[in-house]
Length: 52
Image (cartoon, rainbow, N blue to C red; front, side, top):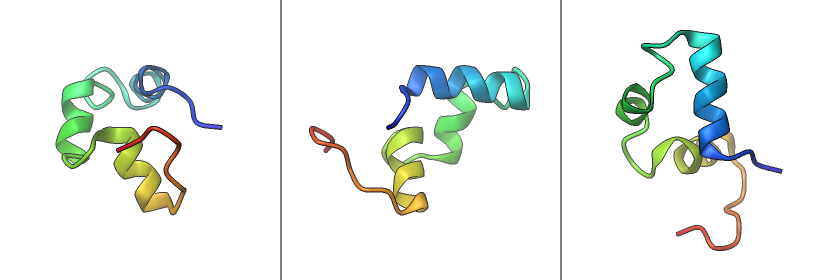
């Protein structure tokens, strides 16, 4: 079960600090499809229904 992108960003902000856990910084790391889509692809997880 995947968590929402908002929850992922909130957790990463707590774990990595305010600067590296920001939405802007994470989109620089994952420029193609955002954090959740590209992270899932790198982890080898399947696309969920409704995902482009």
